[in-house]
Every structure is written in C-alpha cells, then in structure tokens.
Length: 135
Image 1: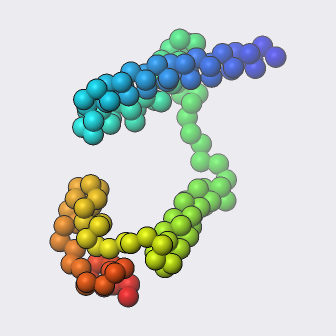
Image 2: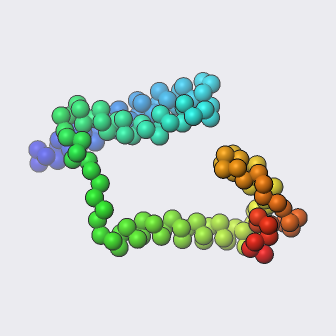
Image 3: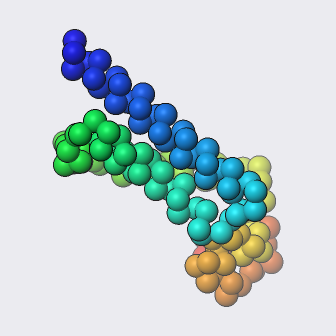
C-alpha cells in the first residue's frame, strides 16, 4: 500500500510539473514564438524534462525508467497498426473522393516544402499522384 501511494505521488508530481512547463511554453508560443523551431523543440522535450525533474525530486534512478522491448507480437502490432489505420483512413478518403488530394495541394504543405518536394509534376487529373504513379 505504501508503494502505491508513493507511485501515485510521483505520477501526480510528474503531471503537475509537465503542466507547468507546457503551460509556460504555450504562453511563450502564443505570444509571438509561433512556429519557430525554438518553440517546437521545448514542447517536444517537456515530458522528458518533467520526468527528470520528478526523478530528482523523489531521488529515483533514471535507469529505472528504461524501455524494454517486450514480446515480438506487441512490437509488430506497434509498427503495423498505425500503418493499417493510415492506409484505411487516407485510402478511403482518397478513393471516395470525399476530399481533394492533388499534387498542387501537397506541394503547399509545410512538410513537403521542408522535404524538398517542390519538383513534383502534376498530371492535371483531380486525384493525381506524383508523375501519375498510382493511376
């Protein structure tokens, strides 16, 4: 019972610290930082920083937080499930033409510009894929 209370204290402390750090970063982002990399990186590292601070407060070894792979079946699920869900979700939207998915639209995405996908040529068809590969 004592171990359970100690664990509960650690979880509550972690959530409190993570909330404080995240709130501070969000306030900073909404007051002018916007999409800059200096604002995105801290919000990504907020859970990790909160974990380290919580471990220091409770004098817990950070090595106790290590990840173990577990059973291969669950590893396979963790890789395959997001792929299957993405194929189903995007595939159904694309095939049903519920939403326009054109190369012109893709070229305007920020991530496409960051990856240098400006060279994609459109075939002029509604649901065109790069160079008409999937038509």
